[in-house]
Image 1 (cartoon, helix red, strand yellow):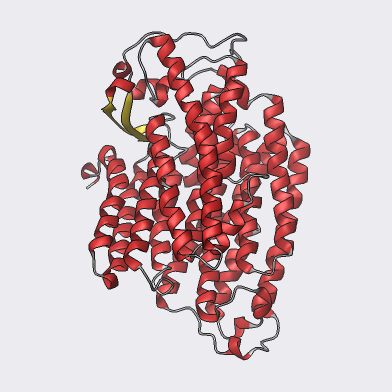
Image 2 (tube, one colour; image 1 turned 180 degrees about the vertical axis):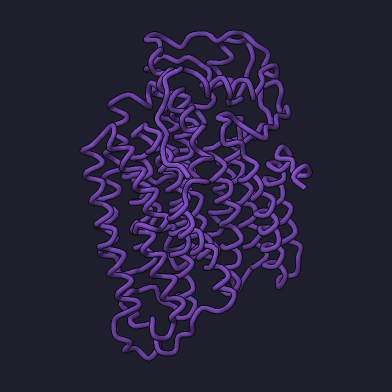
Length: 541
């Protein structure tokens, strides 16, 4: 059976299948659109799942590579592949989408065909970002995501949906335009040295750039990624987008879209500009901004009367921890950061689904409107308690593993930053546990709350895999960490080796070579093995 599973065509199928499913939703009868969307996302997840166990954990380079010339005159190709940094992000995307679709069945009552089509078109953009190995292709997928998410917020959102949708679009579009300038500059530098244009990942990552050039180009990429994370102070679009988005939109924003900023730093920021990424000023700035995000978001979340807005601010805090792990530049920190991106997608996605279920019954997200509902919704209460404890990082849950590795890794290089960041774990309990107490365990003194019904069969099927993963990753993170380790170690070696040999003058020329003569496998493996210094590993099975 595994012989039939060819990862080379699977990646392309993962990109194209949602497009086909989205088109099918548009022509399907209104009542059938949700069924078509759910079937498409379930098939998508089934296709992606074998990537996990067929992945070669000892291979640091890209696997399942496909490279097809697209715009040959400009060196643009349809090039896709997967490594240890992207595989968990792909699986997180395909895992999240069926839950987001199923969670919308009773929430969306108008323009259902267009809604589910937008969800599937968005899926193509998200998967494309994680598999693209051509920077032009990456940028196309990066921009494609904006359009369906804009409509999801602007058409099916809350009262302030237009304001939130425009704010989301403008913030992300501005950062993306500067990144496009940096991408074109890299391609021009390659053309100036080789005589041929190329946007191929393996060509541009091999460029030798002066430190000043790296700093400017890194800034162009970093702004786009910092907005998407979102890193303080570029986070202000997020609470509005989360609050006004429909439940599925909030789940996708928290589960997948926010991870693309950190993924961008790992895929492009560090390996393309190693001298800039390891510059003490840059590293300290990123660490301090991540730390501010952790503390500031926790304090703001603690005073939110709206449960959905409270959860939105927790995303800023959790992604602040991930930024610490990345720019701590240790194996444990980066491994923990990647795992914590998965953990955040699971736990925060589950929180948004739970609040959405409550809103469908009570038509309110105000914490003060609830109290004592554990008596009438025991299954809901159990799920909310487990997910909340995961969000605050209780040992035995997935949230603890990621935060622990991040703090251990950061402590090795920046002990004071790690020590201060540890207080964020305490603050997380200060905003999450009172919310749970007030919603579930205070007095049941409102008649509207007495009439609430517990989660139904469909909702239990949505919550069950999320709760299972919270516990599985919490007690057995090894299989997930093992798939990231080789790529993370290779990334750190590459950054350390290349940053130590950066020229002080202008960018130097590269060796002339035909663009299509470069082997993706050879270059990725070569970049992975650059340098001989051993790197200590992180967690294991």
